[in-house]
Length: 215
Image (cartoon, rainbow, N blue to C red; front, side):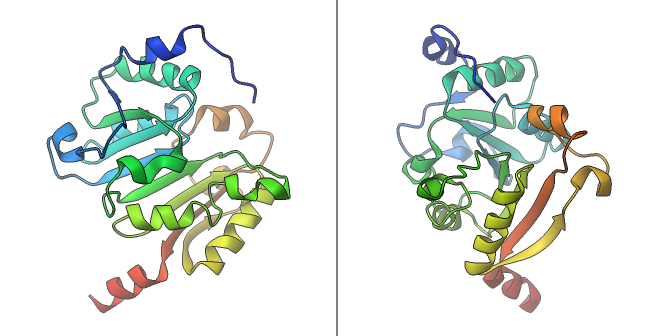
């Protein structure tokens, strides 16, 4: 969908206390003041999903990343209307994740309705490509990733790439809203769930599953 640019969005974004400046490695324990698990949504858009997740899961810390200032500004406004202490937002490009998140810090990653980048020459920009999977592997304590999309081409590509990189499917739905109740939705999902199927997969890395089985 087309993004609406907001005048002086950059200055407006900087005014919010729930925004983390990612100029250096982030000390999440200092920010959240606890050792609770950390869940990360990459490309959170206007924030509906991660704000609702934070409301439902007070014992989990949530981080939302969005690179477009005009978009994250809307999420920041929504966040300010809540009293959530377990949610902070970052305005940054996810290609730079390793520059501000320490290895083995994150417990789960969410990818919701990422840009499909359908042209072959843009494959490296897909958030489920070999460009990003190794980064996620470094950041996650145990590789758990949930991926949701309405683009069948991106979904098939992602399943193939997960398989080629040693991931195991933990849960899969080819029409999420027909198969699961009580779904936490994104803004995009709310608009289009009635007109097209939503595809969902949760994957884990085989080595982590093996460890769990041994334990």
